[in-house]
Amino acid sequence: MLTIAVLALLCVSASANAIQARASSYNGEYGGGGGQRFSHSGNQMDGPITAIRVRVNRYYIVGLQVRYGKVWSEYVGGSSGDLEEIFLHPGESVIQVSGKYKYYLRKLVFVTDKGRYLPFGKDTGTSFNAVPLHPNNVLRFISGRAGSLINAIGLHWDEYPSDCSSC
Image 1 (tube, rainbow, N blue to C red):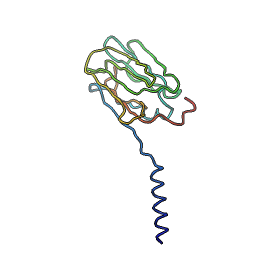
Image 2: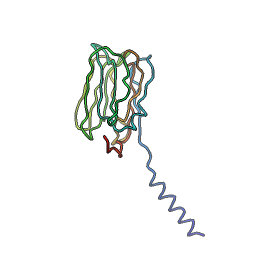
Image 3: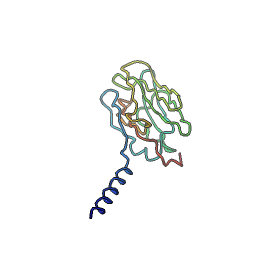
Image 4: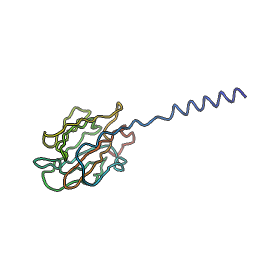
């Protein structure tokens, strides 16, 4: 009977070690009030972030669109201003996002694990700096609020997807 109890305890212990806790975290929301809520939580299933489109005007971040794997998310925001687009290199990830806001989002800076610094917008307003809470995590998706401009942004961090053969 003691042998069975010891074996059961060893099996439970081995099973617990095989289960890894998720190490996700969230920063935000950075920005002002208003706008309609959006979330790209479902888009992360298409793969890691591989490109980012940002529409800017003289004062604000007007719109955002993110490519997950090979699939672009729905565009959020307004239509005025210039559309800028950056592509990440294969295996490259965003590990830090900083920016500025005052009522609306004014600046976004994406920093990658390859040392690239990708700025969009104007350098005025209240500053924020977002990094993952856990080591080896990357930006997995964004959320926030938008109307004719990007009102606010939230940043969601997690591990780089291990099954990304199509990215």
